[in-house]
Image (cartoon, rainbow, N blue to C red):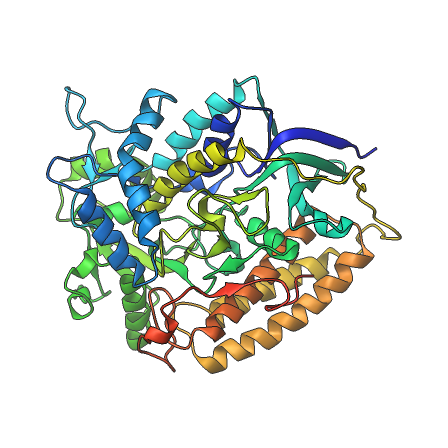
Length: 533
């Protein structure tokens, strides 16, 4: 039978943000981490590049702040930028000293090896070869699993948040309904503070560098519960994903360009000098649009990332995972350029928060990629995501331990009513595929008013079908993920239609210039945006 679970802190997600929060909050109470597959199945584990922090004597906080604000194209919250940059070195030290993260060292004296990535004016990216996220995930997960106050529920997926609105109370959250995937039972989890750390929304698009778990669950649940979401139109397309029929979602790290990689057309000609003075080291939004423009102009399927002018031993040592993956597909990056294309990579929008991760609903926090803290503005600077995940999650935990519990005297359990077992899985798979194709074709790197309106109409029809199916059949994880990506798609389209200019990651050919009237966040909330159901 479904049952009620009591905890002090409910964390939905097990990447760098969720685990960092859990480890700090566990000093003050019981923590339940809910993760819908294995704990290590997170976007963090897929992160290749590193974590940006000012650690070189020749670098400065002001330079990192300036680079972040420049990339953010007028929409960064300077207070949050300064906070994250200044706390970056301590966060890196914490990862090393408290949790045993093994970052690369450049010499026997133990100096950290610092890389440079696109948009950065200095070497400030701490890394572990080309699997930095996996190393951070390994260390944090090991610490969480041995902590007596932390329980991790694998293969459990949050369905919806529990809020006081149903009970006639104030705007506050006190937990979530959680689906046990193996049994289909929905449990009621009641918590003093609830934390959304579900990661990104890349699976909204047909081609993405994200893992399969990136289905916008946190944003969708928060919006349905009445929390504000913001800047969903700013979706970052990573310029360099491996182009190969067998290379599903394999990212070619920003760090390759940071170490001297050169983008070329299939003819061997360079092209980035026509788009930005930093050439192949330009920020991601610039590079992604440049590649998209060149592919459309030439009719080619991909461009090339050329590393062949760099020492072979260095490439193998610095990028062992990328080298091995390419080699397994017949591409030797030491002697051959790597074929690459852009793919959906990172959502700069999300649940609107302050610098402590607090949302517009009391006792509900959002951290990591599913949050919109203001650090990234209209475009995220490379390797600032892991920085945000560790700095702001720690601050959220410091705040959440002081939460005053708000809950009804008796909590209603999940009720399925007359819902039946699902009878046609094809309904889910068909709509899943259609949402992602519509978004890729009409709401991608370059947008127009006509494409956005066409996408809006189609997504609304698809959501009508999903809504009918949801209420008639028992919930499954596939259905919940479909429901979430369809809502997230609608939020992205609505936000893009409201921003009648081009800025950062949002480029509309019908409004190609920036407009100071839109130098503000695009904020949506249930009631003034798409239907939440």
